[in-house]
Image 1 (cartoon, rainbow, N blue to C red):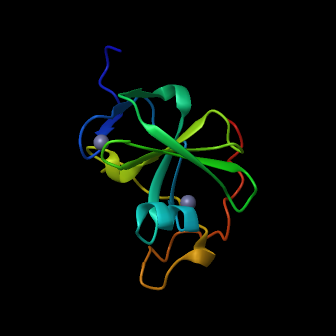
Image 2 (cartoon, rainbow, N blue to C red):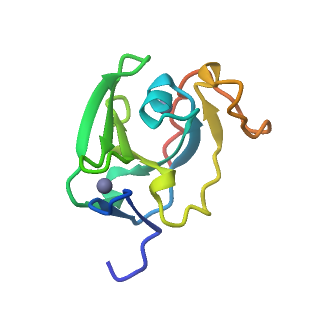
Length: 143
Ligand SMILES: [Zn+2]
Ligand SMILES: [Zn+2]
């Protein structure tokens, strides 16, 4: 890996670090109840990448829950400090979601959509210009 990665990040304690070697396929603000409960906030800012473009160092823990769609949602977090880091969904094989707050420099993040808007708490204000979905929209057509 001679070139500089697209982005790097880590958990709070630094046990888990990662580097991302490609631009995100999608970016979204997610208000689903799983994101709200697991983050303790009104939404999670997520960037989705091809899983093989994200190199993770250090060991992290994973926890499964069943999403509203019936898919299995797997949340990755640092087992030492609890930072929420990654997400995988059985409906999107080969894709990893990175919690954008764990990225060192996330100035590239530009959400394209607000998902699970029906669960958005009124106090969590979002960009009114963004398209809103009450669930996870289907993936964009393959390039
Ligand atoms: Zn940690
Ligand atoms: Zn969510």
